Image 1 (tube, rainbow, N blue to C red):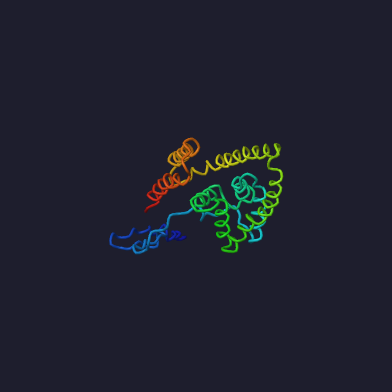
Image 2 (cartoon, rainbow, N blue to C red):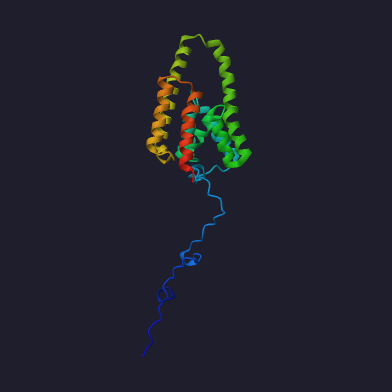
Length: 233
């Protein structure tokens, strides 16, 4: 007569729950939280993995040179297209977070963004490569155009062309803002609060003509305070 099969240990002996005064056992696969351990830092979107990363500082230099040479009337829309859509080095959320920091720092926001991105990728070598790509080739073009402009600035055709380029630049900046709006859904403030701040900034700058400095000091401080309270453990 065959003997009955011995059931597995997990079925024969059900898991025992720890006593109230007993430390959690390894059966749950978790460890007790150390009360002395400091709370984890708030998660940054920049820590998320990007679709791909630049292979070398040389590649960063080439890409930033290419986008800088396309930036007639404004480099920001081109930077968003190159870094997010074409090269996929950043997600829309990461680009928006870098741009937010670049906006509050002194200096051109796109230059600040390039420095931060290069440093994030390859340290100081990446930062110099991105900065060189943003400045070197455009500087040569600007010097050549400056000499040409000095001779033909008063020509009606040249003056009309410059006014037309101003309208195109405005359209490029507006289209970039529309593309980045969906990224606000993941903002720590929540969609309603984020869109309310966007609307308030637009009204104050575009309609009321409030200087940008006071808007960053006012609405910027409000946004930072609300985000800090929501991230506070």
